[in-house]
Length: 235
Image (cartoon, rainbow, N blue to C red):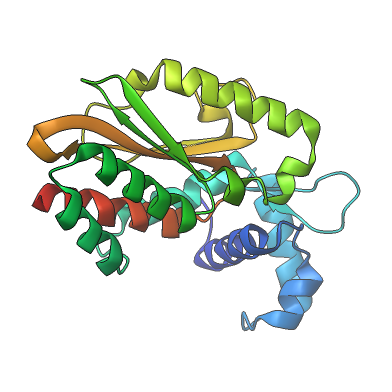
């Protein structure tokens, strides 16, 4: 169990790390945020979060990054919040309405929209047609993690396994999220998947998924998928 102050610090570290891709130090937090406590207390709280397994210190860096446990705590709080905001999707709403009679055009526009707004690889899979559509290579390859050859290789393996066995995704319409080591599609712990089953026009079942580095904008991507799924339901 962690305190409210520790929750705030943990969430702040996660948001900063997702944005910067750099370990977050207590000195950085002291200079940028007002937690209402002295610098020594911030350092102490970050140390406790590390001891509890929510943060870790990569290499010899003075900063810390979230662990799988830290991300999971953060994501669970998002999912528990009943007031999740849906993103403004007027552009995609227009496309869905225009292309609802042509599933292939709809998937093309929808996957591009998801990729551009998530900085992830967007995959739409239709079960009955055994069709998958991928968009977002240009966006995702800009992420700093892909500068490492092993990371690229690991992501390729994840994608291969995911496309070959996407039936593992929960049969419910609720969002399924795999973080790091939770991921059943790869042995690497560097990736995350956000996925949801949904209904396309003519009651065609499928999934919408976002794949990317574990350092992803979970709240924004969860809201994005929720918004699109709701729009599809309206069709």
